[in-house]
Length: 390
Image (cartoon, rainbow, N blue to C red; front, side):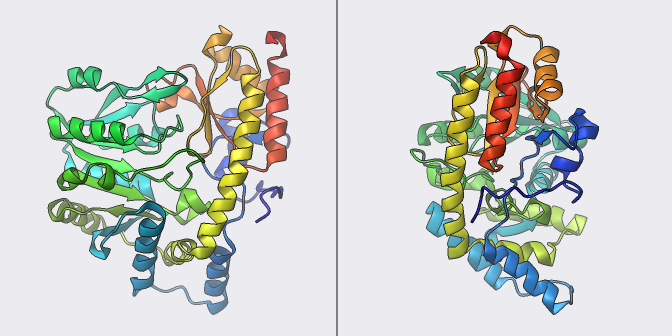
């Protein structure tokens, strides 16, 4: 587990590294890719071995007999999250953006409202709009350097035409681990407005010391009749290219509707993704994640200390995820100016705040899941780019 190893991903069809020049104008040879949410680390050895064993066998037919795969998911949820899952609750999708899109198809109709707590992961709004539904942005409140929900304001926004609420827990991009009280508030909000709650918990394994992620079924066990859970190995173990995710649905009525959409669209998992996920959810995978979190915690401290030392910049303290959310509002600069300094002068490719919805206008998102030397280099570049403020 050498997280300090610099692995050159250029020329490997990596979206993060091979597309940053085309999309952001950041030079491929000298730029630092800190946008797409995958890590620059090798996965656990058990995952690599699973792929190598498949390659050695040399036959890539249809996957069958998923008992070990389902048992691995159930073991991980029980041992790491205290959540008991039944095997017939689990659906396997082509990643969780696909899972969210299927939920929208299963539980809403064109023109219905889908509620998001913004700023939030940009793919949600993209699939909502593409499906002909309406994005309803309930803006989070920044208080004490962290986001909080404002249920009173959100209640006033509801028109009765909303059918679905997508929760990001832990929150991307703000890095919040929602408290039991906040999760209970979300559950009650969904009950008041008769909304199906889709809880995307893809970052639930990437939680820093001092914080405790609570799965929604444990926070609000009385809403299982309207709850859809989404989890995955992909963020945790850096296997996003496997395009595999789990949609876990305790309620039989919701399960039937979701199964119908999967059947209608002919969706089934690829064998590589299933084998990688099975290998990841293991003792080997657990040890790797524990080491990863220790390393990411060091990256977080290095990045926040360096960025927050620049007058006008404020990096939200991460409670979870490896995605730093930096506010440039107090620089007094227009967005074009601070973007120019980050992308052209510092040559760092980052996600633009407005793509995350209301409240993201003055922010940029930085991916710090990369070797520490690269994080240190990024901090130095930012300090040089904004040296006139110091």
